[in-house]
Image 1: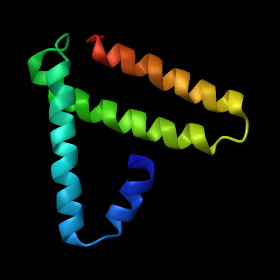
Image 2: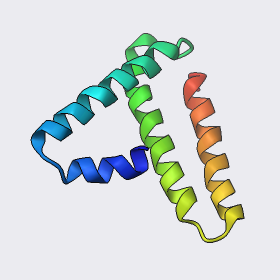
Image 3: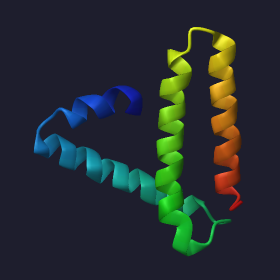
Length: 88
């Protein structure tokens, strides 16, 4: 959903952008709360990084003509996300 919604919101009115920001902030807070293996002072930043990584990876993977390349993108993002979640 982020891959298609975000560009539309970015072109939208201030109210739509504010609603999107509020929703994403709630999602990031939930993600941060689950990062129990990450130092508390780093959780919010790590949550935003994870959300950005995953949304971007889906966008890039979907754009690949070769399904194998798409899997490589997804696999790389998955490995990086796992490292970020474990506090590495």
